[in-house]
Length: 309
Image 1 (cartoon, rainbow, N blue to C red):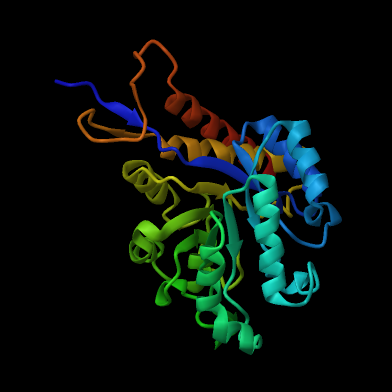
Image 2: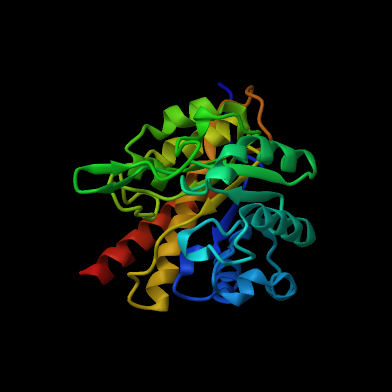
């Protein structure tokens, strides 16, 4: 009987700088390097460093960690960052990605009150995508809810699979808030899935961005599918650590998220199946990367539970 192998896709695991909020962009680089992430995704927001290409390059060089993606300033709180014109924001995000060596720009669909921008958004994203090798990966969002009322805040739609884009970002926390089936959305994205924001959720009306494994979303299932299909985009940990009581607790959460992701990206399969990379399973007496990640994930979860008590 042939020995099974562990398939590991070419996907890199990055840390979103938003995951350390309210700490700074610079802190995110430091933590990502110390914990062993493959890179960072820069959330461009009100932190001046996140808007400064030269400062970001210095951080990347100092910590020896690449910038893999740039998240354009699409949030309510970033309406005046890099101009008030949404197309100017995207042009600057693309220029930043090109100068920093990032392969992806993450962009949200427009707010409904940005009427002209929303009307031209699909064709405009295609036009910008044709002008660069950088991927413009449009991210799924969710309807806003207050008590029993639902407001459709995004246009053309919060469900980006209803429109034609070259690349998509799947965000599992957003899928949870939308109360939609994340894996069905991934099916609709098919080979245009270019980027992943990994976070968990329990279906709350609030966008939770829990550490993977702490909610009800199919985080493990999605990662295992990425491993089996040879996904070549990036998996970005984008979690909410605002409730962390200390820097040590925040780092433990981010270490747990990384261990969970690496464990489930290492998918066992038969050696006859094609895979981007493969390695024989380690003998029982040795420590394999998967078993090490599993122990690390259990240890991190136990530490986090102990602190919460």
